[in-house]
Image 1 (cartoon, rainbow, N blue to C red):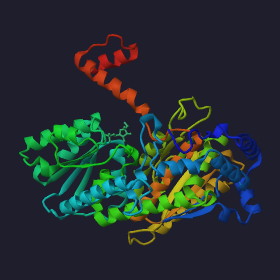
Image 2: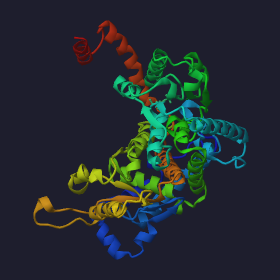
Image 3: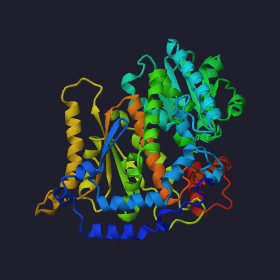
Image 4: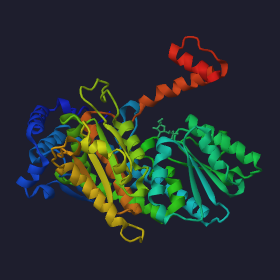
Length: 520
Ligand code: F6P
């Protein structure tokens, strides 16, 4: 429970909520982006925002200054700042699990501890130093040519996404492989090309009882021994809060973290080892520094000039006041191709909830469906629907100002395409032929990173974490639990036994029929 603000009102209980509805209703009837820009030369300036390592243009969304003013009142009424401060101060804001939520502490420099958290920050830096020293030792070891990273969800998506994003600065002498799925095809295809003496296996699991990761780890250990591998302490490392479970499996080289780091917020902890191995300790520290700069912005910038707050408010506006049920992410950088998957977990596991912190059913929609692919690929696939489909889907473009390659003409083309999509969505094109008519007046947000450096990536991810926090705070959610993943895990255990035995007693007809067909 929050001790600072025991029960901040959720957005639909706020006194300003009816005014927002009223305003949205009016806008839905007559608002047109083209006219909004024509009528207000200051619109771009008003709706753009500088933040560490990035610039964001929110002006091509279906809102106006009075709407944002009402949303800012909403943020104040829902005590977003107090909720934010409670999180940073280490209050137990994850009420259903009785935990603090301190991923921001993982990127907090030495000596800048929030009051009362110096002990935790000391542990953070001790582990970080040890983890980075280990990463540098492995990087200096020419005998290790392949690293197999096993982990799923928060223990897999972040490292994989970040290693891909920073590919240009990765150590080319070492191949990084990522295995998340329990589907043996994935692990087998990686093992097929490897030698035990030149491979390091990283087993990343916060709780160390995740079925997929443990099954993959056991198979990797079996393969290692079967291929004559000997030194498990040198070739296997576990990243976990549960070192004793790792030791039971025979993995004694471990780096830990703490229960106050949520899985999908754990990239900054020991879970980031694959990133540190790929780009080095200094670059990993830059990643942390970029995220910390965004934390500072989030904590200190006034609400109306605070990018995570403005994005979180826009998310609630789009979802609840305009009724848009999904958001499309289009990173215009090939290195960010796993970003949509990463953001899916961040948004949908955090805010895909149907009850508020007190367990009361929500009377309004929470997390939108997040989806996407890199541009320009998406333009030749699903953008048709964004431009001419029957549903309006806000598009979020993430582009990078300066490329890290030297190929002539590519980056200009890429940026021109990103700009063109946002422009086309807004402007549309009138045509008597319905097939060729573009209605326009469709929303997009444009985030421009200065370059895809470790620091900018850190800032971008922290920005997304905090906008998810803001929306969750407005919806009155606990954004830091994930009870919705439990039932499927439980049933899978039962069904695995039934698949072996053929027992279908008390199963529904469909599950029983499928199970029998699988065994036939
Ligand atoms: O199944 C969901 C989940 O619990 C995520 O929240 C988490 O990131 C993932 O599983 C992996 O968990 P762990 O790191 O404990 O293996």
